[in-house]
Image 1 (cartoon, rainbow, N blue to C red):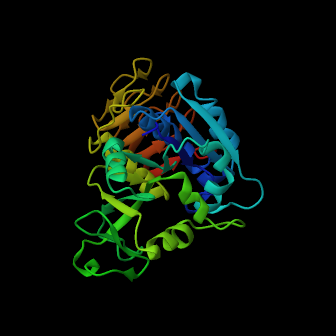
Image 2 (image 1 turned 90 degrees about the vertical axis):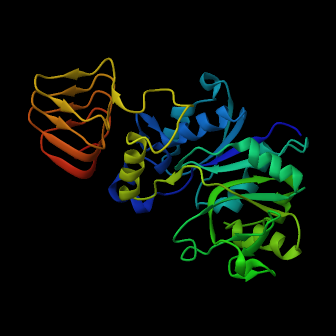
Length: 330
C-alpha cells in the first residue's frame, strides 16, 4: 500500500472558546509550549506520514506561520484555504482533493487539528486494508456516546449503527463515539456532494453505510482528548501534566521547569506544572497543581496559581484559579 497522505482539519471558528477565539484559532491553543496543530503534525510524523494538507479559515495565517512548509519537521505541508464560508469536513475534503489525491491510490488519513492522542495509526491502516474498506472510522467508548449520536461496530469491525440507522446485531454492540480520525480511499471523495458546505457524516458516510459494504470501524481505548471549550482545554492540559497521556513524539518537556526559566526565592512549583523558557516566577509565588506557564511569562511575587494556563509573554499580577490568561487578561 502506498504511504498515506493526511489532512489536518483546522478551519473552525472556535466559537465555544469565547474570547480566546478572537486571539487564536483553536488549533493554535498551546499545550506545554506546543500548539495543538503542531502536536497533530508531530503525531502524524511519528506514525510515518510525511505529506500533509491543512485547511485554513479563521486566523489561518497563524497556523501557516507555525508549520510553514513542513521542512523543519521533515514533512511536506500544503494548505487549502477556505475563503468565505467554512466548508465543513466534507466540503474541505472536496476542496482539497487536488492536494490529497494524485492518482496513486494512497489512502488519506483525516484528523482534527484540536486533539491530542496516542493512537497507533499502523493498526488502523492494517484494519482498513484487511476489510478492503472504502472508509474506516476510529471510534472510542464514551459515556455520552448516545447523546452525540452513537456509532456501533460488529465483531468483524463493520459499522452497523450510524446516525440512528441500524443493521442486525447493532443493538448488542457497544455505543461508540467518533474521534474525528478516519482513513479514506480517494474514491470515497466521489460521494461528497459537489457544491456547498458539507457534513461528511450526513452525506458521504451515510451513503456508504446504506450501500451495505465498505464502511469499517476501529475501536481505540488509547488516550484521546479534544479541546473545544475553555474547560476542556484546562482539563486537557491537566491530563498531560498529571501523566495521563504518553507523548513520545513531544519536541519539548511535558512537565517541570525549563532550563531557561527563573525561580525567585521561596517560589514553589508543583510537580504537576509546566514552566516555559524565559519565564520568571517571582519570590514566594506558588505555581500548581495543574498549571502551565508559557515562555517569557512573568508571575509576580506571592501570586498563587492553580488549575490555570498562562500564555507566552503574559504578566500575572493576581491569584488565578480555573482560568486561561491570554493577551490583555494578565
